[in-house]
Image (cartoon, rainbow, N blue to C red; front, side):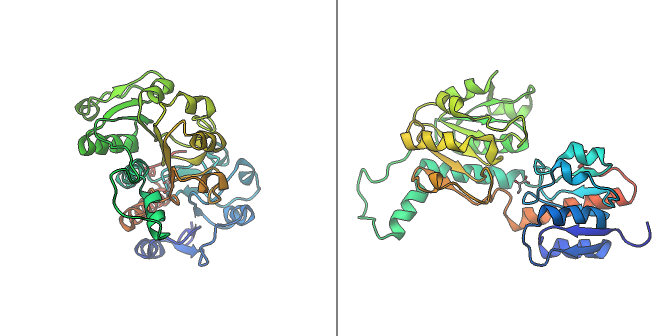
Amino acid sequence: MNGKPRVLVTRRWPAEVERVLAARFNTTLNEEDNPLTEAELAAALINFDAVLPTVSDRLPSAIFDQPAMRTKILGNFGVGFNHIDVRAAQAAGIAVTNTPGVLTDCTADIALTLMLMAARRAGEGERQLRAGKWKGWCPTHMLGSQLAGKTLGIIGMGRIGKATARRAHFGFGMKIVFFNRSAVDDDETRAMKALQMKTIDEVLAASDFVSLHCPGSAENRHLVDARRLGVMKPGAFLINTARGDVVDTTALVEELRSGSIAGAGLDVYEGEPSVPAGLTALENVVLLPHLGSATAETRTAMGMKVVENITAFFDGRDPPDRVA
Ligand code: DGY
């Protein structure tokens, strides 16, 4: 290749990472920091050697069906890559990488934040106070549920699932049950006495809190649907920091409205950033704007991982986090 590879960063990144990137590559930034349209992304595949997309970009299979594409690698800024049709990218000869590991603790922290906020009615309490409606302490005011002694069900016992279980068990005295497609049997899981169950339904039926940590995919779309929500214990809470479409939102709104589950804590949404009015109207759901990996440290580490991946690729080495 003549000169430095041409690299497009689709959204603004922490300044420190942008500086490293600019020193190594011929970098173009999206100064306005608006999500790029599909047409802009399609043009990028023709004009840049590397495109560095993130969760707000859509790269469906049709986008890879164009002649004269220049892009050789998509260095995704994020661990989840369900916004990219990875098979179509691969078929078009484009490598795809992600950023695993560096956002594990951060995302597990947000899962616990949502559990605590939902169980202790923190959002509802804050809204009441800010609206000037708090009438003062009284023995029956805004009673929630405690975490200690309760059972947390984890769906997807990968890195983030385990980090969430660790916090809940060792920090808050919760019992852990989980579902994972493959067997999980390691020292840490044993130390937590975490019980692997054979089916998702068994986990749902046994848990006071259910936290989702499976990847977004066609297979996992509406994994938690009306039937499965009906399997959850009355009074249980559902926490989602994975991907919005893992849960059927319409069915969830119904369950929350009827009170057959006590509450939910959500960080991700089907079709985000729009959030259905059915959800925002409810008091028993905590809603965060996809903050799972949103710390300065983590976003910097994610950017550095992308730099590491594309540097390896253009140096002719195998990128450490290649997913396709
Ligand atoms: C990811 O990395 O997949 C997150 O959802 C974006 O922070």
